[in-house]
Image 1: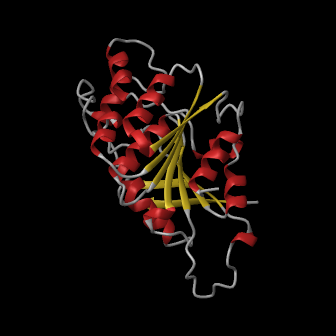
Image 2: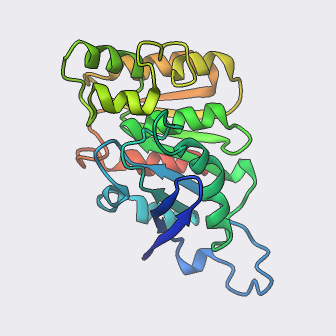
Length: 255
């Protein structure tokens, strides 16, 4: 088992970026493919706010890539919330277009949307769902684990000086979204996006009794028959239920 680290220049981000790549086991690769015609499925996996792509090292991400014969690519996102920031880089555009292009130039991964999936945990789940809803021509399936989805509620708490539960404050949220009084119904509102987009398949998980339980159930309800909602007893990142990620990736792979 092994993984690579990519460090490259992004014109969209106006600087360098880093991403971790979890590789399939050798017996899952066509090593005699001299013309490099075989292209493999890829899961773009997003960390939560305040974390980094290294967080996935403590999960079953590497095992999933090895056993299921897929590439898993986990980029760093700093404090962008995977958004085209109002004051900052256009991270959504980077994630949907530039990053896949850079990786395809260096790895045998498919450009077919049916073999391009996106997922995340915490606010990374928010970013993943938003990307899948806004870019169904890029990502056909999405896994959202222990998601934090209601950005309008977070912005309202920040305006009221209340704890918001993620590593942001009022001013940094303004840098991401602009006018944070107008998030509801906007391109940053995944509930509104779910009503507009009819494409994609979604796997939503959440811990029973979590403070974000209703947010997760609500996004699953908005997605209707395109979503599967799985209630868990633990969370993937604190390793209280480590199989959450593996079961989600098996769902992607139709296992």
